[in-house]
Image 1: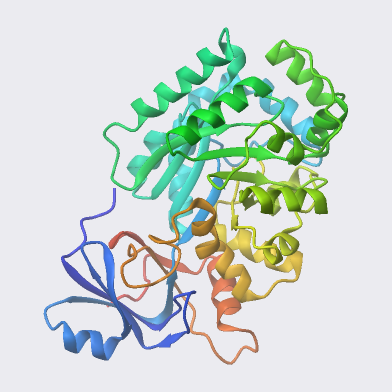
Image 2 (image 1 turned 45 degrees about the vertical axis):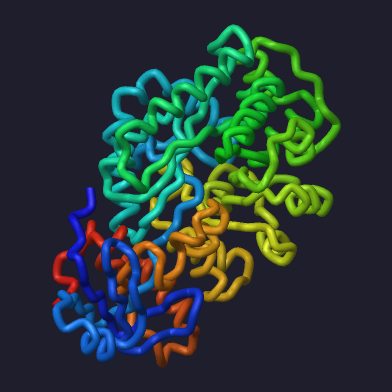
Length: 423
């Protein structure tokens, strides 16, 4: 857990980059009771608060902490299934699930630590029945676990949804104040339409939130639209029910079973997302989690993120997990996305921070450095200027390249790189 924050502390650096406002030279943040009380020049904040502890990072820039909109903590680096094909990768993953149970907690703990050391302060994690919640809760991160469920393990959709709803209620007991639990309808090929519809209905009725994987792979597109292929075999074996192709895209299918509304975040959206699908996403108000490195590794295509952003769809960045992505560094993910789509550093940095907060519905509490928000900060070893690129791109590149030297969640410093130069 994060160390208890001082009643009043000033975090200062050569620059403060709020994301929602202009760069501040010799900037600082006044933090009180875990929240940002004021933002401005170090000189003024120090003069106005003579009793405050001051932590100065002299050759650095303070930015908002990264908000990871879609992650799987329970995978480890070094023995990931072969990529290039979603079906081949999924086949190996399924075959290794029995062995995975033994090392999932350690993997989740290590993944959370890696994310923290890369500047993440809030994480939306998805795991089966919320199995990685203990590791997220103990890590010091703020975040949310989306608990996935498998309806084929129950006798009816009602029994399955009753179980996951009760599971979520029980998991919420005794958690840190900024850690929550919600429901995930994993994917069209693991959750039957009746269970998915009922789960979404229950979540909406109680004012909850929902996550889902959607239009991730060519195999998923074929399964939903044609009812054939590798995932049709998986569905028949797991769900033990017939599936007929719907003749529509995964996005249209998700809309038809009432899975999409502003409380839903859809991960990946990498394959076959058409203009008609984008219209559905706009109409339903659903948010998107962009995981471009996972999409590339699994041969899933490229999500139309610029088009979605242009239409006002809330988009955040996600790392996915270490069996489909090279790291838990969300700034590295955002830099990859910026280069992939030809986007600016400003857009890339915003996607990693405020964009993720908006996608998850926490933008009033996190995602940018503003008075009243939680003091979720990342300190990056970078002093913008003179490189020919924008300050945002310079800082994003530094953070992506291992330049994070400190991570602060709710005013509590949970990571400091050795030799960072804090005074």
